[in-house]
Image 1 (cartoon, rainbow over the protein chains, first blue to last red):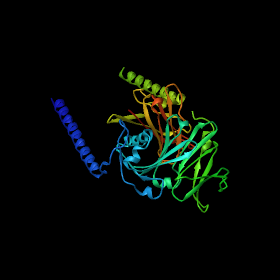
Image 2: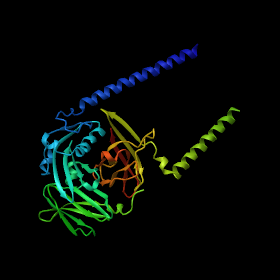
Image 3: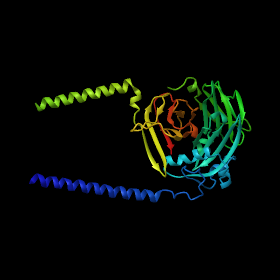
Length: 233
Length: 142
């Protein structure tokens, strides 16, 4: 009899704890929801069957990257569906819809078409090239990191023995230099066109230098390309 | 008798733990099993996979608990656990074994959009830091 009463008491305590936990969780979630940003309301431009990609307004990035233009419906609908797909799908991973605030497209040479997008505050670049078999590689970074030259993507297996580097630089950077021997001066330079540069390098560690019009170095970025001298397991 | 049985159970448990540890050492692929979880929203599956202190130059493949890893992946993203400073790649292998050229970089997120005619297949991430690092992958499929 005593044992049965004890079991009932324990069960009652457990039920009470579960109920209390549920109440606490509900309160926390409701307070979190009230603190989050309101959902985007702009027109959805993502392809059918893809996560929503809303149109938004140009932000701070547009004042530092001249390639960016307002994301009008016409501008967004002119983008390839494969590019819209990669921009939209990152939203599904973050459990919130992505907003396309500004966008621009650059022909970077050697068949590369580069889309630069301000997407939910991140600066993304997406590359299309016939040599990529329809794949769309790219990178997204914060505005600060993009200004520091970190907004680049490398393609180590496009051609044997070569690593293609495609990157984004802010306004004011006219050329990108390659310092292969580490002496702080560029051994070769490539021009920047509409904030985008492209170059092919050997799979060896090197440093990229962002060069202003007067030749001064605005940023240095280390490229550990020796990683691609042997294939990963 | 009860004491003998409990001693035997302890011995079996210790032996099993030792054997599993040996497998994890001798067969590192097994240690990667079940690193992915997925959620669905409006018909889109968003999957994450991650590993702490993952060795360099070693592909981390998406592995789900039910073993259903070959999927119609749309985009694969690679992240590191340090706010975007590790040189890493997002990659993809088609069901016939062909690889897409991976996308690599040190930005916060590196991504590889996968063309429809290359699906289904498997996704992976890999890093090239000097030592073990925390890395993660995120991929979507319909």
